[in-house]
Length: 424
Ligand SMILES: Cc1ncc(COP(=O)(O)O)c(C=O)c1O
Image (tube, rainbow, N blue to C red; front, side, top):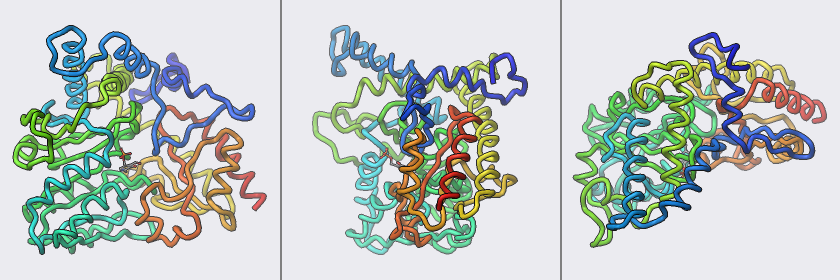
């Protein structure tokens, strides 16, 4: 689709988008590579690479100095925080940077755990990545009781009756994924936050898997904490934790004495990955530019980001429908999760599949030889593969579409799946 053929206000100019991502041009065994490995990390636009290079070339220094490169580094970090605040709809001082979501979650869970006495409860879910499970489960060593919400096996959605049953007056925190990195389900996080708050518990949202697919608005969610990772939304390898200012002030981090005690600095242990912070701003500005294609009058970065995600959601849905209709026609292919297109507002285009009689690894290798990059296994969503009885036989193959994937790529992917299945 070229820019001249963009008609709908929600259209994505795929040619422009793909032109932004130089790594998409790679070939494998003569095949143009198809990156459907996005749930484990997306590709980055050229401007992210340029921002990282430029930082290292011109501004490389530690923070808080009185000389030019240090002052520029301080300003660059402040801008990354403003960009992330626009991305999340938070205040800049509510944005904490760190190495990745897992490390940030381990840090905040330790600090929250300090205040939890034996007998208090934390509610977790089967649908979550282990980074939003094990850090909380570790608090069992303090006598905290973990209650784990089940899924509905038929469509791999969260069992909301079970959420209601597990939350009680003893609950102190509910941790839930915005979207499942295994089967793509988008959880009703607004309702989970409401239920948590109804008993005075904190709500922690893992938005890592949702962030490349939909807009995040921490104010509308009213969540207490939310974590995500820039490398899943077209940026570099860095993690982000949002916390309501009052919580970042109240809870006590494990920190070294000379480090500042103001927020958010008190939560940012040690020296940050400055070059990647420069890349975070560039990734967010890329998304804002994408939004301006359909909303040239967007008068703020936040407004442009909201427009970008409307386009992304609309476009991804067309890819998802094409993939699911094609996949369901393949004999022996089983798709886990929501499969009716009418319900695709409850999922992101991340699909876990198996082909009867063949291992996920065999399928992933077959696709890889044809330049199609997928993941096989459990992707650390081990509660899900265990719950579905798939863990001992190699888990699933995960196909994760994002807005830089094209309709032609979905055709090639389906053709390869058909060919593999016909040989099974
Ligand atoms: C849903 C989800 N949560 C958490 C994580 C962990 O993120 P990080 O690699 O930033 O620690 C991942 C990574 O795959 C994920 O998909």
